[in-house]
Length: 247
Image 1 (spheres, rainbow, N blue to C red):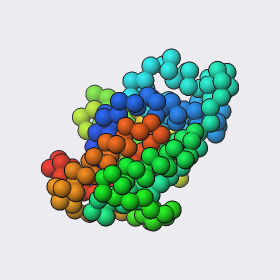
Image 2: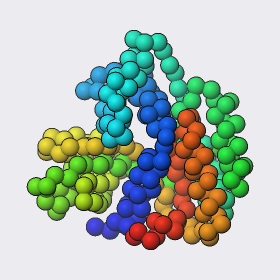
Image 3: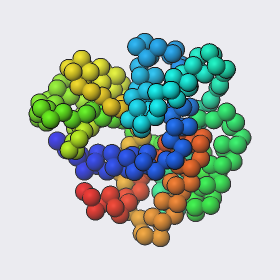
């Protein structure tokens, strides 16, 4: 199928970012809280919560932590409220950047995000200044069993409404429109496949080449965002050197 290298790059960037997060449990805990608030504490009746639980388990988050976050959000152990905020701006070299945050203090988070942009040679922009360069896409990760036939899995995913498909030795990666992600995920589960993660991400329509100096600043910016508990996801359209090498 077309677009494999593009999707592989997205998948690799995500993996590197998640693996580098020392505070990943804190971030996932907030996602669990928001999911419970939006659809209730029962994952059987709350697809969003089910997806976040899968993400937590894929990150090796202890089940006790997962249940504690759900109980807190449902009012059994106190109450927490987080606001979802999206910031847009430009990194060094004019790289388009989108930052998703969950925060209990908007002023603190806005100041921190602005500081990181400024510190790394970029600038915080206005709403919609770069979002038109991205498209929301569903990305579903499926465990690859020894008996799985890759072409068969791909055809099942396409029949369910997927747009694209990629694979590694251990996993399959299915890509959908935002509106189809729930249908495709549910169909794969009904077909007996183990869905590891299912989430919507911002995918750049195209990437831009940057020099080594600019890349160093972008990487520093991404590291600083990763270290901030309020920041959940960061998307950009820079073509990073190591992603090219792995294509």
